[in-house]
Image (cartoon, rainbow, N blue to C red):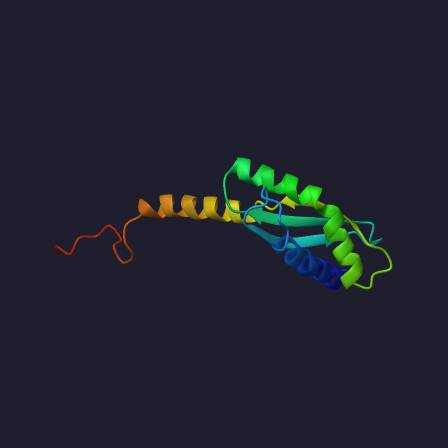
Length: 121
């Protein structure tokens, strides 16, 4: 299934880049999960921008799903073309949040090598 998912991801990523819908912003297809029976594929995307831009992009992608499914059908030799749906991938957003938390915590730590001892002796 991993090979099928990766093939679908590549076709969809290329197809998304060619869509002309003005609602669709900067999109990265981060992954695809195809069910074992090939009936459904969830396409995970990250979107550059705020919540409003994210919603608009997902709406644009959903309205273009037929075009993208046709492209999958044309480019891949699958016994069935999965119905695709789009889902926002929060991984990048969570990574930024976690990095900020780590930076906030480490900003309060003493510098490396400074164990709270003074050089006076």
